Amino acid sequence: MADATVPTPARLASRLHGLGTTIFAEMSALALETESVNLGQGFPDVDGPREIVEVAVSAMRNGRNQYAPGMGVPELRTAIADHQKRFYGLSVDPTREVLVTTGATEAVAAALLALVDPGDEVLALEPYYDSYVACIAMAGGVRVPLTLRPPDFRLDVDALRAAVTDRTRLMLVNTPHNPTGTVLTDDELRAVAQVAVEHDLVVVTDEVYEHLTFDGLAHRPLATYPGMWERTATISSAGKTFSLTGWKVGWVTGPEDLVRTVMMAKQFMTYTSGAPLQPAIAAALAMGDDFYAGVSAALQDKRDRLCAGLSDLGLEVFVPQGTYFVTTDIRPLGYDDGLSFCYDLPRRCGVVAIPHEVFYDDKEAGRPLVRWAFCKRHEVLDEAVARLSTLAGHGPD
Ligand code: PMP
Ligand code: GLN
Image (cartoon, rainbow, N blue to C red; front, side):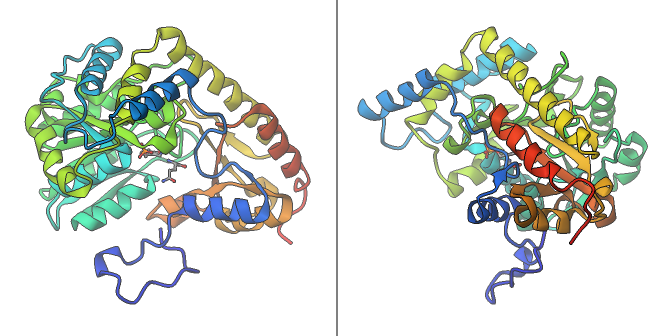
């Protein structure tokens, strides 16, 4: 998480030491500077539906520019509740069981700050999405990794059981999982639910890639499992599903007491989130089944295209079941370290990717792995592969 090249500011509070600069900002800056094809930070290169943008524009033109209610505008809360019913059969009360946030990022931060006391242990899937590490640290918690290992990146259920102690407070579960692309199976989710119920844990789930699953695989929220609704804060966001990552509209659903708990922190972080964007996301969530099916079908094509290209270059490719990222082992290209590979790549061939290592406590486990984003136009993916092909057969300089 720490980037050794960035000095720690002298006055930085100790609980933020070692976090460095987010790898996504760093790599996107490097991509701009070197005019590289950016397969690093995960954002699509085509905007979401025009008609949704128009709803936001008209909300701005029609006076929806002052603070939204702290919990979110009523039509968005209703649309979120309807979405949970439509896709997962969950009955959610839009007045008490939905909280709109500034992206999933704020929802995760608020949940951790509101639920974790200093010294509490937080179980999380490793590789960790980077903001988890920072937010657990800001809450004073102690992260405990549940490491997903190649080639399948499955959850080790025995390791999960062994990781629970009397200080475990919370489990943070990201599925579909960034960066590995793992979608937890029914058996894995059942095991997580059993452990949570047995040890009376609170569970926070990050489901921002809920609609980005492939090969007919369906995402199923942990909140649908027996005994889980009452202990789960379910987080998602509009960014990925609707290709509107810059809008930062996210949400939490769950039982009233948990949603209120998260709200206790959120109200003092941002108070309320982007008013005119909320009615637009309400309209987006209500789009037809063909829209949702189209999102995953289009991405699956992109996944297949990039995976084939990377595999043809000789990389070991771990085909993802969801998200818009693919992981590879870069050792066939003569490197054994993804960090140096990713720092060399822009200069050597004009492509940016993300080293897994920054997402691990167990640096060895992540060392040879590199993440590539495929939420890009086909010609961009092809250009990246063409540039990378100049590397094949040549190790580090
Ligand atoms: N969680 C995961 C797993 C992510 O990959 C991301 C990044 N998009 C986020 C949360 C942040 O979501 P948002 O942009 O809605 O804050
Ligand atoms: N979630 C995006 C990714 O994993 C990045 C978002 C960010 O820059 N924080 O690439």
